[in-house]
Amino acid sequence: MLTLNQIKQQIESKLSNSTVEILDPRKDGVHLKAVVTCKDFEGKGLVEQHQMVYATVKDLINSGELHALGIETKTK
View 1 (tube, rainbow, N blue to C red):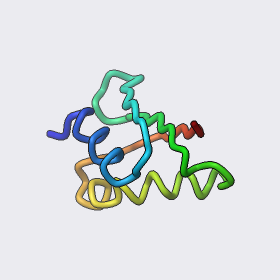
View 2: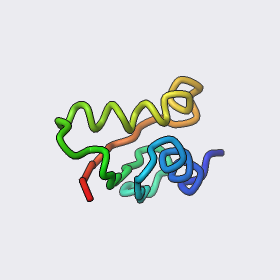
View 3: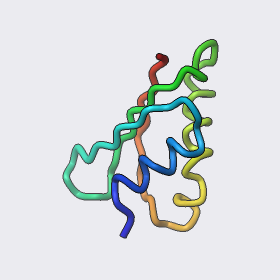
């Protein structure tokens, strides 16, 4: 089973200059939330920021290892 730390590490490794916090607000291990702060978000719209994050976990979603990921993005 995928850990919250593994998801955090994957996003941070693929999205340089980012700081990531993975939350499990429902405490079910399925409906997760990523709070991603990244300087590279500057000047980009919300949709593009979210696409950048989803691109880092696309393989996890496609394989079914990651079911649901809400995203909150911030710039540094």
